[in-house]
Image (cartoon, rainbow over all chains, first blue to last red; front, side, top):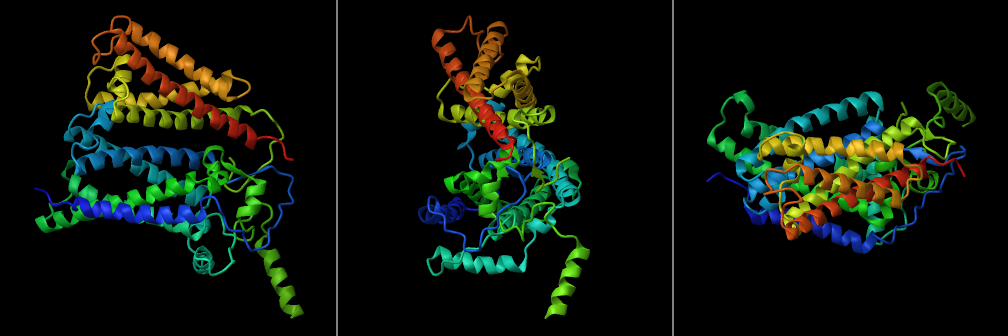
Length: 279
Length: 169
């Protein structure tokens, strides 16, 4: 019998996530707090603001599909028989078939991650939007106090708020752990040296734990995408853009500026020098 | 190429060729995901005749077998076909309404039904013309739900695309 994470622990992980979503739904799904920072109107004669380009959207949906299949086949391997009827359309009828799909999708996933890293870092330069800033930490406290009714303060974030950034890096961490443990357990073409029994057990348990953490994060991502308050932002994953009104309402232009409204470095320096001279 | 954060300033109410191609690929793909989820749900809940949809598609395209290899090919083909239908919608229709999406979904259903009347999928004991009526109805209901889901998802994506490409207020 191979060592696995006991099913009750897996269920517990998922229940913790579900509890968080239930609390959030009761508090926020239909009653969004009013942003307290003043709204800055967009002066440009536009209707929509581009959020995601075509490559980013296609990447998102192919990833959705790939991870969906990997989760479905992985869960079928973890709890044999439970999801077997779900896999009939794919022609999967046994554990070997589940493993074949699970491992075949690894190559698609690796390709997608390469595209994601190269495109988002080099082509559309998203690093500044997704990496943590000091202001994000302040936002956590402000939004936490607001959520529990201790304060009215509710800041406008950049393109991604602290929770979205945490979600993204949570996905990344989970995929790294799942990738390393999964590749060792699978050992394609025998390219890795054999691992001893205790390491094998550790890797299996870690693979299971991070699978359910990852599943919880995905559930959260889907939950926050489909609640009515966020529809105006979810639309951007289909069309690529949000309306000007949604942009004005949801974002702080200083943290997520429109192109063209950004000042160049020399101008910024000049302004800084002027303000210093005045003071 | 438009960069992230770039302002959409299109003054055309109708989509240009590039945007239509983008809609065809993205809409076709996303709609196929929705249909795949329906296919899995139908299989999981046993609403309709259970047969391997993706394997069946591979068989229709001449790929023999009923195992995971055929399933993988069929699954890939499913998305290729979905994108081809996306191009038909994006370039063949004018108004991009929900009715047009459902109409195209119905055409898909007719085409699939026609093919399954001519070609026998190895998993089934006959074609739609020779199988028992109850089996045919069960198959058609499953296919209809899938096709109409595809059409509705495609139309929704197109409607949102048109909205986001209208001229400024």
